Length: 396
Image (cartoon, rainbow, N blue to C red; front, side, top):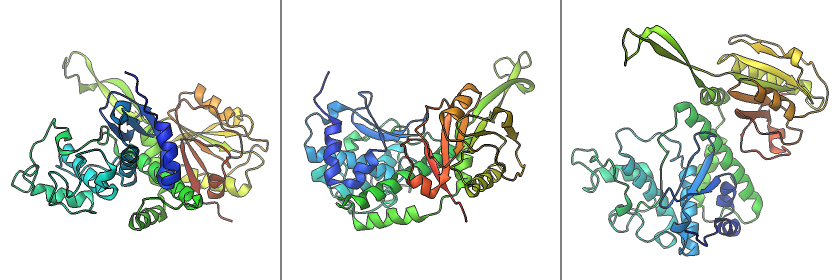
């Protein structure tokens, strides 16, 4: 069934009223899907990008202000890390879903949301105060006979979707990230919010409906220094693949002592492309090698020097634990297609590019790719990419 709902039109209207949320929206992939009944923000397991799924039928006859409220609701889930944080232990998924929705809907208001949504003070939540966190509402729900088991815990609510309690959006995929993937995605969320905050501050229209308290909380979180060692470890973990081999030391459960078992090792073949073009200063090149010395504490990787082409005779393996000094082997221009093609032809699981970013947008990578450059160059990069971009210190 075809509907007349146009998400792009509503996102355009968001631009004038809600500069901060509009900036977040531009960095979240959107996908129409009738596989879900309403809408929901989640993480694409293949790319580790945020995406918002929406059913156009759900929005078909909805008032404009309520459509905007649902969109803001979804983006708040990203802001408050509900999508990426590990669910509290022994908390049923449906309970956690409702607690997070109560916290968010409290800020948006019932008039700006679909009818009968779960909101403090509303139907079935009359005694719940406004303006509290999801963790606060969890504690209240333990004493609520709708959820609590009377023993300080929660009922078994397996299989319930919460729609009868006003839970209107889809939270699928929230609890499916590994620790390494979660670390990577949380850094990506922080990057999105940092850019959204910058866009909102430069818009001349402020942050829209975001309260001063939430704005202060976001800005404080953005001040936290990123632990690049954790980011790199997470990148390697996310790029790992299963390397299976037969072994008689591991028993085959289906045919014990007849067939060899399967031994599974998690490995990652990482390529590191180093921009050696003339626009990269010796100072930056030294900073790149400083980062690689840190990375070598975590893994073995292949180093690929390039400018407009790859110096194939200079490609080498940097073994885990090795320390190296910086070395310049090229002085030409810059073309990111050269290392991308080299890596695409190889058997690599991840690709990290250390560069000044001063070149045209590259071809797509067949494996997970991440960029590292000085903060100045990251702030002035000439192309847009959904891939992770890390700003590193380049000291004088």
